[in-house]
Amino acid sequence: MKKLLILMICVGAMTSMQAQNMGNAAARKLQMAEFAIANLYVDSVDENKLVEEAIIRMLAQLDPHSTYNDAEEVKKMNEPLQGNFEGIGVQFQMIEDTLLIIQPVSNGPSEKVGILAGDRIVAVNDSAIAGVKMSTEDIMARLRGPKDSEVKLTIVRRGVDDPLLFTVKRDKIPILSLDASYMIQPKTGYIRINRFGATTAEEFTAALKELQKQGMKDLILDLQGNGGGYLNAAIDLANEFLQQKELIVYTEGRTSQRSNFYARGTGNFKNGRLIVLVDEYSASASEIVTGAVQDWDRGLVVGRRTFGKGLVQRPIDLPDGSMIRLTIARYYTPSGRCIQKPYDHTANLDGRSLRKDDGQEKYNMDLVERFNRGEMMHADSIHFPDSLKNSTKKLKRTVYGGGGIMPDYFVPIDTTQYTDYHRNLVAKGVVIKATTKYIENHRKELQEKYKKFDSFNNKFEIDEQMLADIRAAAEKEKIEFNEEQYNKSLPLIKTQLKALIARDLWDMNEYFQVINTTNNSVQQALELLNTNKYQEILN
Image (tube, rainbow, N blue to C red; front, side, top):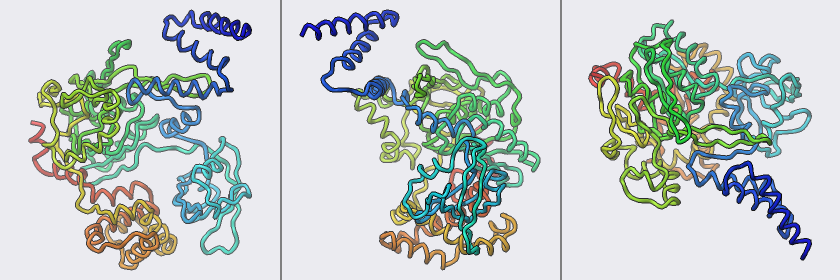
């Protein structure tokens, strides 16, 4: 008992001394609790796990976007935004426990040694990966590795009797921010950005200049589904459209003084007609660009209300490689709008009071609630209080803050061709598998018949045999056939199949050229540009 008392006194004394410089009672209290548990608890404890759990629970009390990530999560999170990773450079699809190469990355390590689209990797460094039900993550871990390290691949190629052996030297593989860039009409360009990463501005500028060489006068910028990324990347993109010294965004917080970010006047598309496409998944950096374009009346925003993430996170690196992403400020559009949607009882759009836990749950379920109350089908289902009203900088048009960016022209979500039968086809991978099988059986024939994408796009049609294969594959997956739903979804199924074939034969650029024919927001943007509606809204 005496020894225990001495230990407890030591715990208190040591903890007090260690925490003296931390400056407040709350910090000392936390450190004393951790020290006591580690030294006095009846059973052994994992201190690292205990501290991690404490950090996670503390951050959960703040806001939905203050988070903790362990070292491995940090690495995975950063790769897409940094713009590259180290590996062998292939796009692949797992088909029946076998890795099928969709496309080798252009000028990447695999293409350089002669690996082709349609090849199947069956072993990595003499260890089988085919037929062993290995997860995609495990396979990627085997294929990736440090730059200049070598990996041996055993490949099965259609038409070749014996397996082929390749030694691939790993290299940096780019992760592109741009999904597509093409002339959608003789004077209208289309660029789709999937994230705001380290190379986004560079990729966009190169694509923009190439389209301008082809005669582009108007631009459709597609940010649908773009969940954000780096603040600097958003600022650089907005700079492409705005005049010198026009405010792009400003940030401000309790301990963070206001910081203004202005256009430098060096943009390459400051005058042409501009339409920005958004939806309910467009968030954060996407909303910065969209808000700046809308507030300066620089172009039209088309689609549906954006997600509503207006909080700025600062990454705080911890000694073990883990990271805290702590909200330190809110960002505001040029007109002064904070577009962060409510996440606690103090800020609810309809004015009703919510408990903290209820507010968090409501935040997490926000998109589902939007759909259920009809907001994604009818613009008049969206209501903002007058207290959130603002005006654009030049034309003084009414805009609202406090819950995402409301588009200038609303496009309802298209549910006309979506059915349970189609959703099951997609969810169980039937469409992807059918495309892969078709390509595998007809690749050479298709490549000889369609030397260029334009020929394929104009002439290729999904035949009845492929549709029969889809139905048979669905039956094999125990998807009950529903003729009414099948016929309703048939145009969509055909378009998706054709787009996936185009992707496998060419790339994502060609995929979007096909799939955008069924994207209502894209088609509405074209109508706005081809009529007087664009000018009517911005006058």
